[in-house]
Structures are given as structure tokens and as C-alpha cells.
Image 1 (cartoon, one colour):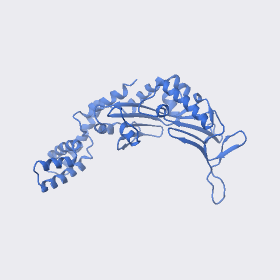
Image 2 (cartoon, helix red, strand yellow):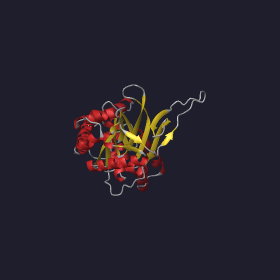
Image 3 (cartoon, helix red, strand yellow):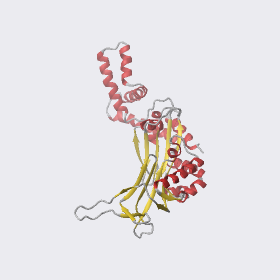
Image 4 (tube, one colour):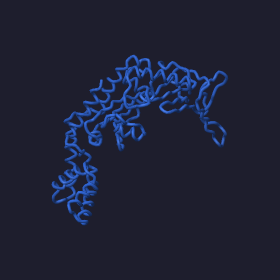
Length: 346
């Protein structure tokens, strides 16, 4: 969550003041702005910040809404689950969010900023659901790669996907792997946890989707956030029917067949089927494990060398396939599971 404070006072702040850059030829400060009045003088600089784990404050120049020049804005950013309890796996309910906001107001006071946080405007709001899937995250990657992200660009990472434009984002990722990367304990948390997030990145988007924009209105209409989350997830991410997803998978298989037919291979149908079956094997079994099994079965060095070369080639060929997870379930069944679990949360 990021908040814009419309009304605040600065008293004995613990902010780090960043001075304006200076043009070395003219000696003119190129970004020097009045940031606040401390009761005795106007404090100037490029911007000022307070940064702490899970919590930050920034005071910086910003164009006035009436177009009459530059003003000053104070932004407060924090992760509500982490700020409330130091752990961001579990979502926070209305009471937990209210307490986190009260704590944020106290934290602001300790930093030297006095405000009524209920009047703050939400300039960013993130909402999420954790899905406990029935299979490992890797089995769902081909499904996630098919999700549309309406009028958005998609980017794939090792353990997740991001769909984005300038106003909001969606992401889906292996939550426990992300926590391990952040050096957080995953003890006691469910395996196969996949997080689905929606991020409204600007105040206009928050107000457009929720119909309100202040902290006070958020606490008064807290359940509405979940309703809107389900609506935008259905519109942008889970807009396909199961039949649509199955058709996409069939189309990809057709491209595999077309690839081998265009290659001029004499037995192009058999080559396509061989790649499909080898991809299934390689998805479930590392190449070294296959080679070890050949050794134990009495294979010689020449056979091992040829098989190793063949399997690596099959692995490279299969990369463009991207439709064969290590599961016996169809892509449509995996998609339906995710869609139902994400959209069923109230």
C-alpha cells in the first residue's frame, strides 16, 4: 500500500534530506525545492526520505493539481501484512488492516510527521490470494503462460509471471520459492502455494476500480476490495473458458507437427510423437538419472554417449513446445483448478 498524505506537519523529522544537484558550469542548483517549514525556516532540497524495512516515507516536489506550478507531496509506503505481523504469507482482514494503519500513523509521528492517516489517499493498492494447488508450481507454468493479460505485456521469470501496463499489474508466482529467496522461513506453510496479485499502481486506478480512494473509505468498504479483485482477475487473467485453453493446447501441438513436416523429415509424424514422449520423460526425470539407469542396465560407453547427445537435443527441441507439464491432467483441468480457487475466495 502507498498513501499520499493531503494534510500533514513536519516537526523535528528523522528524514534524510537529499540536496539538489548543482550545474558545475553555472553553480545553479537544478532541483532545489521548498519541502517543508520547520517552524523557523523553509527546508529546501531535491527530496527527503526515511527508509526502514517494510516502511518508507518520501517528501518530494510534485506538480500542483491546478497546474499553477510545483507543490510538495508526502508519500508513505508499506506492506500491510509485513507491517502488521512481520510475515506476508497470510492476508490481513479488516481489523488487522485498521491496526496496521494506526501503527503506521504512530510510526509517522516518531519520524516527525503528524497526520490523520484516515484522510490519506491511496496511490497504490495491492490485493492477493494464495492458492494451495494440488500439484507443484512447475506443472502450472504452461497454463500461466497461456493466460491473456488483457491489453498487457507478459514477462516470465524463473518462478513467476508478470502481466503489466502503466496503470496496474498482475502477477502469479511460487510463493514459497520467493520466500526462500528472501531468506524467510516457510516452516508450517502449505506446499504448492501459488500467489496471485493485483496491483493498482496509481490513485486514479484505485478510485476507478474501487469507487473510492481514501483510507477512511477503505475501512468502511473493506469487503468490496475482494469483490473488485475477483472482477479484475476474471476480466484480465481468467477470461478464457476451459474449452479455449484446450483449443490453445491443441493448436500448439499442431505447430509441433507442422514444424517437423516443414523440416522435410521422412517420418515427420513419428518424429513429432517421439518429441512429445521424450518431453514427458525429461519433464519428470533428469538426464543424469536416465543415463544412470542405462548404465545399471548394462549399456556401454558408446550407447551412453549417443543417448546423452540425443537427450540434450530432445531437451533443446522441446523448449519451444511449452505444453507438456509433468502431470497426467490436461491443461484445461489445471486451468480450471486455478480459476476456481482464485475466484472462489470471498
